[in-house]
Image (tube, rainbow over all chains, first blue to last red; front, side, top):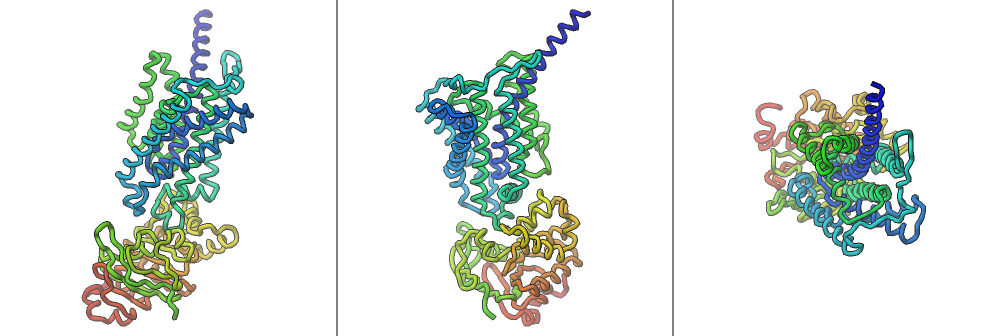
Length: 313
Length: 239
């Protein structure tokens, strides 16, 4: 009886460790999903290049670290700047050209949405190929001193510094974004454009500038997520944005497409589910979880688990 | 009276389809001008062209004699032309107060507080609903919010597109009383209406549009007596 109990509790600790890891992975998805969802909420289009912004942020950070080994905060600030430029460029290149027709029908039309799906996908492929040409297609390790992989033992559980940094960053980004959206003028404009782009024009909002601001904010978040995750996992590679990008997309759909809190909750839920699933499924099968959730959501909750009549973004 | 808004030979096309085929009209400083016409003759297109939502393909729109066609919608709002548009276009997922704040544009602090007080004076109902989502308001309240939001921009010229559409008769009367009150405060109004009778009663000057052109114009009181108007728009009965 005693032995059995100890066996159970050991399984328990392992299980809790899995949950901790799953939670961290979920936070990584959440960091990406925040920017994804913000842009979707405003434009009603999926930005397929968001995963590449994440990848570019990671590479930019690693290049800086390799060259100068600055403190983490300087790396983050640099990556934020790179993310801002990337967001601006992405919007001008892949989205702006399809916004020439400014009436309400074109603003939310299917044609515009499908065109930018492809143009952002095109930009993402080109950027990925350029990075591959410049840095090679293989995994590139992050300089060891900069990695956030220092283990921290708490009882039976082991954490790493990266998990705490990612948790802190996720909380800061989520809170910062809520502050931006609900307490600042530009946030008010972003929500107005998300809610009713035509109405936004009638109250004198420069919708073009608001859309750029949205891309800049969303891409800054994506880029910062990229470098933090790179430091946590210890490496970067040109395709690193794809898998977490897909997961973030699933979280966004599950959360109701335009709800940031919904996307964050679903991202964490997804990370936890994948970790738990490795208990029952072989490694390769855990990919099934995200797509399974996506299907279930689309079949049973077409407006998402947190969708419906809530504030967009 | 000097002209605040002058429109000359305005042309707007949607693709190859011409919608406005040479519209000319004037709105004097502090005046009320109404544009009448049945559905689909281009009244809303006219309003959207003035606000810079639609691109003008020909002709001229001038404010204080300076051309404003080609400006962006936000620049036109800054110049003092605000619109309470057709379909209201309020921010349904945002609160009533946020809607009004958006109408105020960049003004904050003292100036904003004063404007808010003024609007609440006109529409006491809105204050009771400040923290409610705009989409949860009744149709009449939404219309008040729509007009209130436009007034928060301190317009010199207020464009009102079908403000009485879908409202109960009692509310329609309130809206037209409001139009008169807004003018009293010094704001000129360009009013598009299907309710010709009420519009002609409140306006100084009236224009009648048919398929993209002005076909009749004159002082509102005269047009109200014009047999052609009576036959086409006032009918035998009042609605």
